[in-house]
Amino acid sequence: NIRYHPKMSSTTPPVNELSPETSEKEESPEATKSLELKDKGNKALIAGRILEAIAAYTEAIECSPKPNAILLSNRAQAYIKVENYGLAISDATDAIEADVNYPKAYYRRGTCEFALSKNKAARKDFRMVCKLKPRDKDARAKFAACDKLVKEAAFSAAIVSLATAPLSDTFDPNSILVAGYDGPHPNGGDVAMGDKEAEQEDFLFSPGNMPMSFVMAAIDRFKDQKLIHKRYVVRLLIHCRRYFQTLPSLLDVSIPDTTDSPNNKEPHVTVCGDTHGQFYDVLNIFSINGTPSATNPYVFNGDFVDRGSFSVEVILTFLLLKMACPQCIYLTRGNHETKNMNRIYGFEGEVKHKYDDKVFDLFLEVFCQLPLAVVIENKVFVTHGGIPVQPVTLDTIRKIKRGCEPPESGLMSDLLWSDPQPFPGKSPSKRGVGFAFGPDITEAFLEKNHLELLVRSHEVKDEGYLVEHGGKTITIFSAPNYCDSMGNKGAFIHFEKHMQPKFTQYESVPHPSIGPMAYAAGMGSLF
Image 1 (spheres, one colour):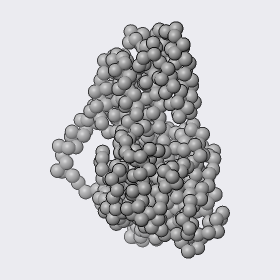
Image 2 (cartoon, helix red, strand yellow; image 1 turned 135 degrees about the vertical axis):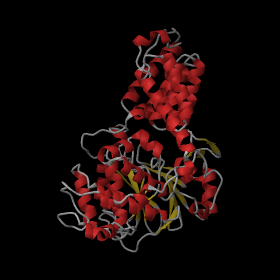
Image 3 (cartoon, helix red, strand yellow; image 1 turned 90 degrees about the vertical axis):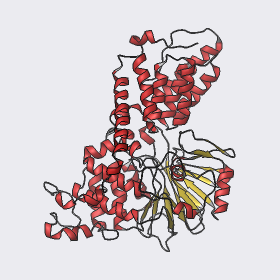
Image 4 (cartoon, helix red, strand yellow; image 1 turned 90 degrees about the horizontal axis):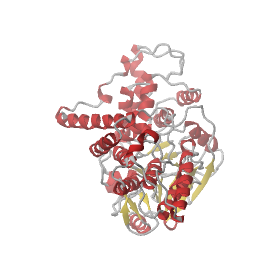
């Protein structure tokens, strides 16, 4: 058996690293093969080949003569990398049962619990890590971070009755002076508009009134790794929050009568999946498929931010386009347009680095108002994660109350977090939130609502897309070479009048040398 001994802690790696160590080896062929497979899994995981690592660890676990804490903990780490927190918690718990003194198992489980906002449970596990490895600075820092969040939550609950108005209702953009700024201005001038022109400037940020010339100038500035002024970002976010608040949770989208797309002369709607802060890959989509316009409309299906380190540029591009031409781009909320995910996966740190905490709070207000789903031509249902396990009507989805962080369970949670499974029925989600739904559930939902197809995102796919459930479910993922390591293609879908999906695949393009998760701080190092 391959087993870790706490007394060897001075020669073993920190708890947040993989476990290559073995304190003893059984000479059985099974144990030898298990060790070889573990080494194969470690190499694959370090190289970013996550699915290959999971397969190797799984085979190693099956070969092991008895439950092995190291193998289970390493597979848990691989599951964490693809946000399968439910499976990772299960493995970490099994690892603890195999060796109650194995600190990395508690560390992995605490990592998942933190990602799922179960901060009390995470604190308990990190406390155990500190007990087993009292000199580990990383473990102590993670325990302190969880403890702080638990106390902050208790304080917030105690003062909930003192809730104040949203920041977007009280923040005055006119208080922000535009000085020392050489970027574009919304009025097309060389200098900012004066105090007497404040109302006119504000009008330019309202839906349908933003000059497209300003949008394109901003995008060009983003390409050069420069930002637009904070005052313009604040105005944009305030107007976006108010605009999205007026929309239903389910949007109806029609195919235009004409198109100006460079590579498809048939009118169509383009559906894209996760983009995750990969700004230069978003620009590549526009290069291939044309800039969004009323005659070349896009649906971006959530997870615009996090992981990639150009998330600010991605979401600002989408929001600027939305305010310039509301019919050119439709945005649905993903599970990463949420406070906890942003804290972990880098968007919060990125916004605070590029702007400040108030701008981040305004982004959160916008995210809480984003619609949850789209129906194209009354035939195709588009949502980020999946569908509820009990069929509901489109009207029920349309009336979902927003303006909040997603609850742990319920309809909003299902739409943001769920995944398809190949066999009938429902299962607990591998992510620890929502459910996995089978082809029978998809069929029942589509039949109840007179629909033909479900399009969702939420999962990286090697080819950029995957067709499942007898052709009734499509996963679309638009971030190629995800996290600069997965090697996958990106893809988008065209829906023309006949509503048959047409796929376009593409590879990643070069970007400035700022790697994924560059702005993730503190607990972000867990992931």
